[in-house]
Image 1 (cartoon, rainbow, N blue to C red):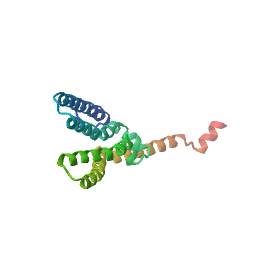
Image 2 (image 1 turned 180 degrees about the vertical axis):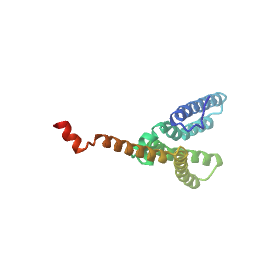
Image 3 (image 1 turned 135 degrees about the horizontal axis):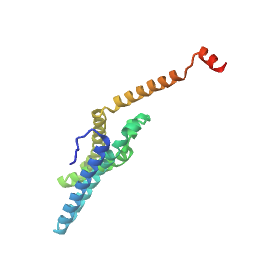
Image 4 (image 1 turned 90 degrees about the horizontal axis):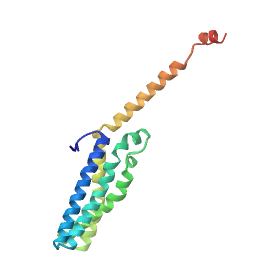
Length: 174
């Protein structure tokens, strides 16, 4: 059973991939059926826009299992996981979704161009907000701090075990 609400990044990545694969499979079946019944260009264009609109989410969910390692390595929020793919595809996907909606509503060209610019920035902002919310939900920053403090105390314990009193050192040498 899919557990899409889990906080385990590895499990969530795997489950979300399955859900996205099912969604894309259903989209392909519906597109094939719509084109087969003669719906033509609008059905094909709509399915392409929806498929491209989901592409940034694939990158966002796909790299979540690496977030802790990247955060421990000091990688900034914007570059953790597969987020470079998110930031590369989100503006294009948002603009395409806005243009598709503008064509559906029959907006004039100037408003369609403005809508595409707003859509590109709004879709990217939505993805950024979602990823920041996810990091807060799994307490990533606190986990990183806790891990770093554990490493500090481990290093102090190792260093304390290596310190030998001078009197013991002379007795062992002599």
